[in-house]
Length: 172
Image 1 (tube, one colour):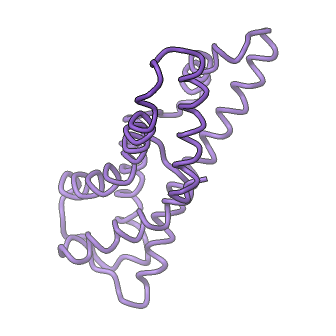
Image 2: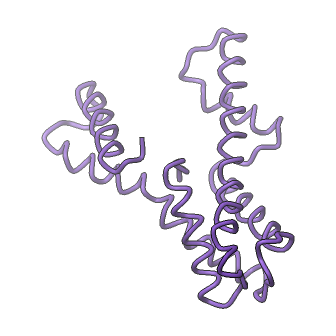
């Protein structure tokens, strides 16, 4: 699952909307925008932290003389050293931050639901938005049925298709 910066405002809006409509939290109408910005800032900070890990990874690859093929392995090492959560753990970390923030935010009047209820609802919203990569992969593979998967031509065309679909969806 990948968090795209362009999806963040929509995710934040949907989270606040769902929690308020379900009566899990109370937000004054004039503060809804601020509450959405709070949720968005948590996701943006996560992306900034991920970029710092990526930068440290690139520097480590250069120092060690590794090629880019070891990027993911070294990134896991850098993430562990920095205590950065990736993948599903990253989503859980973001949700935990959001729940903590709901409890202390001056933009949220009251929180009525238990943490586990909030967690499930926030996760369902995020999951729907973060699975966009799976949809893109399926669409790209559908476009490439005429090529043999695993060939160099397929790899090149697959990446082109992925980039084109992401552009069409406004993700990049």
